[in-house]
Length: 383
Image (tube, rainbow, N blue to C red; front, side):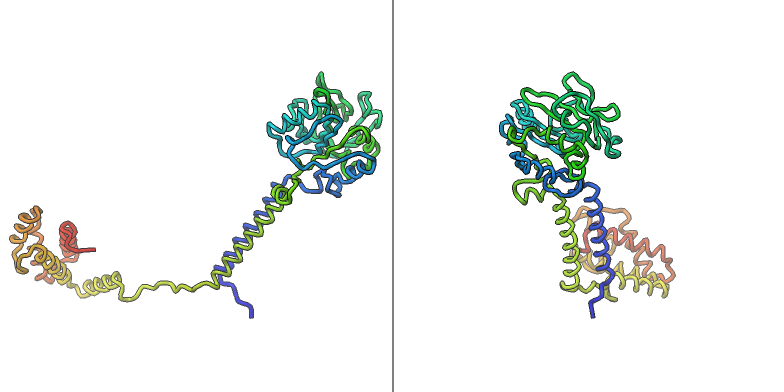
C-alpha cells in the first residue's frame, strides 16, 4: 500500500508545483525567441536559415559560421558578414571592430531593426505595426542587387528614413525596406527583416536572386555567417548558458528540492511536540488563585506573601525573624541606604490583613503588589 501524504507534504508539493508553473510561464514570456523565428543557419524550421546556408555552400561560396565575439573579426576585405536579426547589443569594442571591418572593405548584410545597437546608425525607424504579414517590395534604384530581382517578399519590421548617404533599393507602400550605404571602403546592406533568407521566405519569387546578389559573387568573397548573436558559442557550456536550457535546469532543481524536502521530512527524525504538564508553574498559580478566590480567603494569600518577604529580608539583613517593621526599616537605611516612608505602614497593613478574613480581594491584591515591588527593588527573589 503506497504511503499517504499528510497535509504538510501536500502543501509543500503544491507550493513547489506553483513555483514550477510560474518558472515555465516566466521562461515562455521572457524567452527572446525560439528556433521557429530565429534565422539561424542551424535551424530547419520555417523561420530558420539552414536552407540559405546550404545554398551558399552548394553554390561554391566559401562560407563559415562565426561563433566568437565580434571584436575578434579578421580583416574585412573581400568578406561578407551576415547578421540575421541579431539579438542583444554589441559592446564598445565590438562596435569599433565592426566599424573597422566595414571600413576596411567588408560588406555587412544585416536584417531587422537592431542595426543601431551594432553600428552608429540613426536612419532606421522601427515600426512593429508594419510586421503584419508578407509584403511584396519593388526595386526603386538601379543597382546590381535590384537588377538581379525586381521584386522581393519581405515582412518589414522597420523602414529607413531618407538620407544623403542612404541608397534606397526596395520599398513597400512608399517606405524603404532595403537600403545600403557606404562606410569607408565597405558597405552596409540593410533589410527590414530576414524573410528573404529564411527557409520559408527563400522560396518566394525573386528572394534567392536577391539574397545571392547581396552576398556577392561565389569566387570573389568569403561569407561569414554570425551565429554568436543568436546565442551559439564555441563551447557547449557557453551555448547552453545563453539558451533556455538554463531555465530547464532551474525548474528541475526546484522540483528536486521539493521532492527532497518532502522525503527528508518523512524519513528524518520525528520530534514529539512539547506538551505543558499539569504541574507547570503557571497552571499551579492559576489553580491556587482560583482556590483562594472560591474559598474567599484573600487574607491567606497576603499572609503567605508577607511571611515569604520577611523571611528573605531578615536573612539578607541578618536580623531576627521576628524583628519589627521599624527595626527592618532602620536596618535597610543603615546597611543599604534604602529608605521608604510607606515601608513600615505596608508591613503593618500586611500583618493586619493576614488576621482579617473579611479583607477585600482588591485590597489584598494591592498589598501583594506592594510587597512584590519592594522585593524587586531590594532584589530578594533571584531569577
